[in-house]
Image (cartoon, rainbow, N blue to C red; front, top):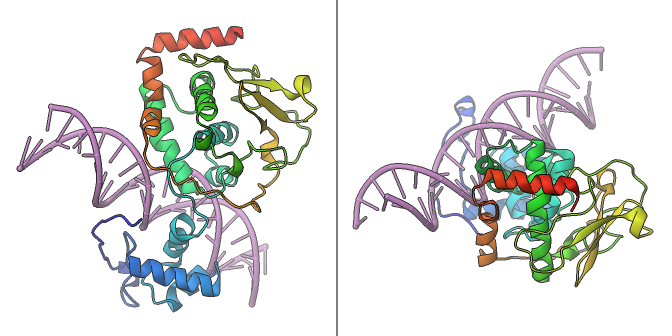
Length: 284
DNA sequence: AATGCTCGCAACCGCGTCCCG
DNA sequence: GCGGGACGCGGTTGCGAGCAT
């Protein structure tokens, strides 16, 4: 989908003598030209491609356009609860290492994940008046957001896209390996509070050493499903050999509600939030 | 209907790293 | 070891869409 924006063509002052460089939104013709050249010559050598294709773009711009938009396996549409869960978890572990996080979300680009974090997650942090990198916010995510996403995954399995993520089986993202470090979001107490409005059995994480024979895995049990939330994400590259399932979801009620879950739940009361985090510390 | 504001996202920019001669 | 070009990453910006007033 090309946004219907007015295309502005500018000349780069430093390269004025050579040729005009276009900036701004890509046109359909440019997209087609780029697709044609990449499919026939392959990725890489972006500067050379930019020149020989006739595109009045920098190689950098061509690369970005291809990787973030035109590449066939780029997944469009909103992030599923499971993908959001992965982002929260991986960001807690790696911080703003967007490309590293994107490695574990097949079809999602670092740019998309970065935008999601800035527009959705940081928005919630602002509303709570805490820093998005603070321990308090991590606590809030752990106590409120993740249980809620887990609820959604349970209630709407079709939204969680397990086949494209680590939730499907122990052979997906990670190999099984021993690890000792802890996940900031999950491993602290290895179980979650029920979300505030949860009317049913709440998903819980159990330490693998207590519940299963999978080293380095968290066994997520719910009333209707189970999956392994594998912790040893940090070392091994994702297995992307499996086909990516396209989940081209349009904006739905679920998504709209998701955008405001936090303020709905906390109802603007920071005090209430702190109260719940204290309860969580007790380990209910 | 007009205007202003906010949000989401595509694209740009600067900088660091890698690779090759 | 050094310099330059290519590439990749993370931060930032600009703009259209949609909502509120």
